[in-house]
Image 1 (spheres, helix red, strand yellow):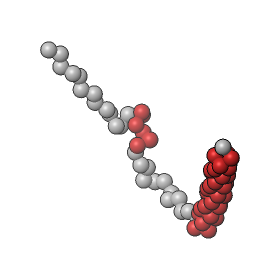
Image 2 (cartoon, rainbow, N blue to C red; image 1 turned 135 degrees about the vertical axis):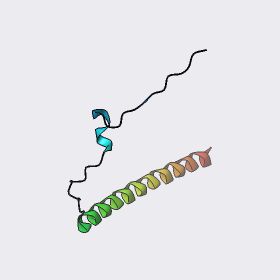
Image 3 (cartoon, one colour; image 1 turned 60 degrees about the horizontal axis):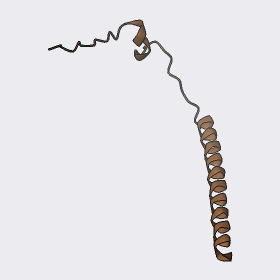
Length: 71
């Protein structure tokens, strides 16, 4: 019977360097005004996208009802 070999990951190797946090990095502070501006822009885009989708779906349902009503 063969025994399955165990895989051992060396977290100190170069391959996993991105997992380690460097303590000497400067903390990035986010400007709240810029963050709010970006959030509001994304909200507007989502609102327009949702409104357009709802409009076309209602239009498709209306066309389907008109076609069904005539036959």
